[in-house]
Amino acid sequence: MRLFVAIDLPAWLEEAVSRLPRPHDELVRWTTAAQWHVTLRFLGEVAPGALPGPAGLVAALRTVPSAMAAEGGMPVGAVLGPTAEWFPGRHVLQVPVAGVDALAACVARATAGWGRPFMGSFQGHLTLARSRGQKRGPAALAGAGVSGRWEVEEVVLYSSTPAPGGHRYEALERVTLSA
Picture 1: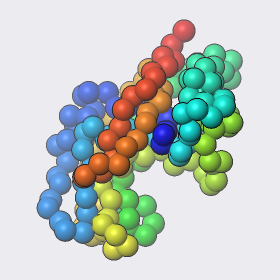
Picture 2: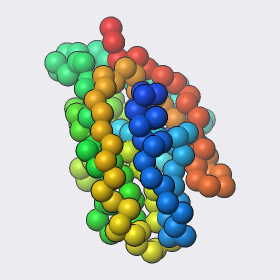
Picture 3: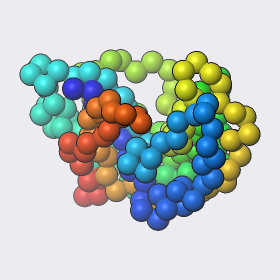
Picture 4: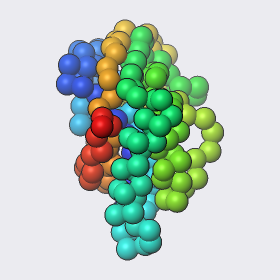
């Protein structure tokens, strides 16, 4: 099963993102509100029957709130925006999300025994669209303004299933960050 750990946007911020212009363009596939989240760690394929397995993964995620509190990282304040931009190569149109780096690092440490190792640096973001195939997305789609601040209340373990129009996500477990 394909898994990742993420945070969700609050409803008021989803509403703000939904008001962004989404012009029809054959070069991009827009994400839907059901796909909006900020990935903290992508785990990839985790076999349901493999040890330590998803139950062990959930137990590991439940250590995140106390670890964050011990590190003085609570509450977690996330900041979306201020504008949509392309990652280099113009294949992913996204809005940056700051303030969640320590949470992502804590999740990575807690889940180190699962999935593929994380390579590179964490870049918090909300994906708005992806270019189709190997084509570069239109530069003009960048620059739309959207911003907001919120306190992250939980991390979510999601499964991801390929579906027409993009992946379908199912929340498997929610871990509240407050004491």
